[in-house]
Length: 226
Image (cartoon, rainbow, N blue to C red; front, side):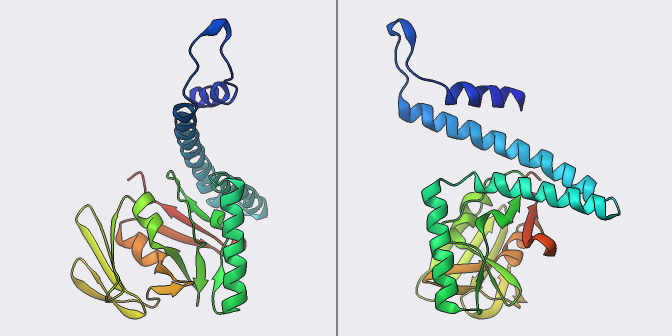
């Protein structure tokens, strides 16, 4: 991690070269810097998750305070993945959802979804509906490493990864896991014209762990490195 921090510092401070040397391509440099920052963020999150596990394994109020501080650090890392404009757009969408749908659907800050190593970015805020958390289907493909197929005609989402196939349909409680029917307490929904899928069904179907942390209203997803 120290090597990555050094590389990030060098990249951030790169300016013109002395002696008339060749100037680096700004687009290539920006892409390389973004990749380094993503790698560093993943390593830092993994480190914080280990500290969080340790804090949560200990009894007492002091350990709970430490755990909450670690969660705050993790949320800051998740938020750092967004530019100011990207985050502002999410906040505006959240306000619109709250205004249009009142208490039926409660938007969550994007940084309240904590992942152990990968970067999970949203263009539509995650939401809580009837106690269940929903996320847009696009991050499923990008972060979970899954293939996602949307059938517009029958409003069906098919998600597949490493031999596992999940099929669910908007507003229908019956879904399928590897061809076996299952009943969803929280079927997919359309929110502001976007298809939202139940996080727990999708994540756990793909072999990931999902934990809701009530004090901080955060959701932890583990197992990306498995």
